[in-house]
Image (cartoon, one colour):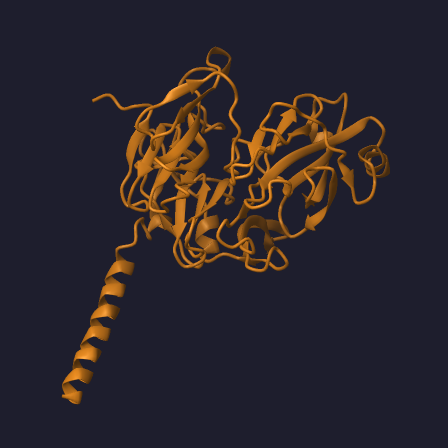
Length: 390
């Protein structure tokens, strides 16, 4: 009897291992994404925005979403961007006349931000001043923080490292998911009267404030504060809501022929140490483009644009990376990646992602062609905004 029981136990263990292997082999997404040949949009090549998901909140009845939308194929001066809100998981939508705060740290929603905790603390960029105002009551009243840096007032800091005709320019890269007054930002010194921002002085470190912007200090000089592809572009920083010691960012990971190589990095100890994520060579590889005559062309630069990082609300090993190549998913803590098939094989067509904080299997992906939803962790997607014609 004991032998039979032992045999049954071994059979059950073998079956469990087999099921685990099958489930792993059925993970969503493509693992052969290195071989994809992308198309490139003829219009709006430098701005992949049409529908950008900027905010997600869990509700008792489901999930609430906010989408920043600009009609496609229309010049910006003819079509002002609009915000649309859904409180039933993207089934119905209503337009909003006023700007909506963003809780997702993607590259397109930096002007008006808040923590993903849903706090009443918000930050809004003041045009012309290039600094963020802070509100502690959901936007009813605002104040300008002190912006003291490393023990110096903002004016003292500017005069020490630049000249009196310059000023601070701040870009918030992330608001801490559990502490709305903890901010990470890129900072540079910019001439007041120079329209050419190439004359600006970038500070080669990311800064942190733990009091809502009043006082700042260096956070990490390992991370790359400014995106090399644009004057006003910065890289996002991701902080896991499950484990605040887990960070994702972009950093210099080495040199090739004397040129800095930019890559995606992770930290598991609260940003004390960083290391490159897995499959780094593939993530950085040049993209193959299919031209109008179906002839393949290779991009001259190898650095993909990184738009956003996102995390599963419960599983610390599941993370997402949104880049100019699409949405990548890892289920093993950023050691390996698969490319989710949103249905758009076009360079810079996908721009953002939101994970339902109540259900990590439900994803919302913003793109040049609208908002897409997946209810199975990214295996399949359906367009949910603008509402498809049937």
